[in-house]
Amino acid sequence: MAMRSKLVAGNWKMHGGMVQNRALLTAILDGTRDLGSAGVAICVPYPYLQQAQTVLQASSVSWGAQNVSQHDKGAYTGEVSASMLMDFNCRYVIVGHSERRALYGEDDYTVALKFQAAHATGLTPILCVGETLDQREAGITEQVVAEQLDAVSELVGIDSLVESVLAYEPVWAIGTGKTATPDQAQEVHSFIRGRIAARSPEVAANVKILYGGSVKASNAAELFAMPDIDGGLVGGASLIVDEFLAICHAAK
Image (cartoon, rainbow, N blue to C red; front, top):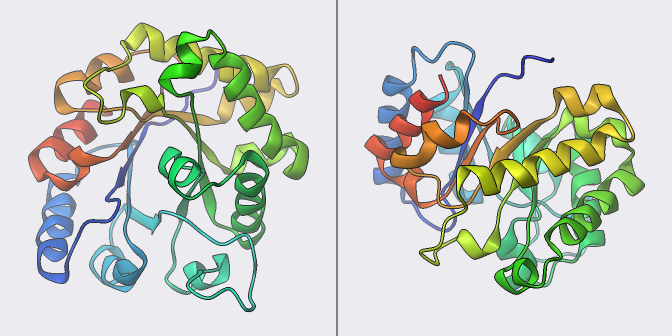
């Protein structure tokens, strides 16, 4: 069995400011010096990429963005391309976050195009997949997740997933008070890995699959102990130093 290292990625969403960012990033640097093979990444709003680069550049903490355009340049007012992200030495970019899908109408094909743009430029996409509460209650979780995954593998090829990170986000467990149990999360992670394995056992063995649905200091260790959960994509808790560091240490 492949020994996959763990990864904890913080998604600040639309939070931050120059002063509080510096304090938060500095505290994260100080608190993650002894994590061994576990990786840490912070995905910040676009205007703060330069600040993240400046504070984190000599460290083992990676940084990235929360979205990227599917276009490489052109008349797309307000959009940011993968090559622009590379100018700030980003390592990661989140694509297909449930908020982008729900609030901004990004469908599976658009997400696949964004994945392709990021991957082609040398960024590591963090591809988010997951079902809503209605979809879970209708019993179509696996169908929804499969369609989201397949859109990418059909466009970019199954091997592209090796140079990416997957994140399973049960949309019904984000800010609803409901949380997926470690067993519920593991069940879907196992399904995802199995679906990839049907096409490439090697890719399946090596791809990291993070869990992203209300990861907290109190549940991180139990989630990360599951065989197919390789870390977390952390929203709100990534803005609270002690919470985030506790989650990072749970990955060690």
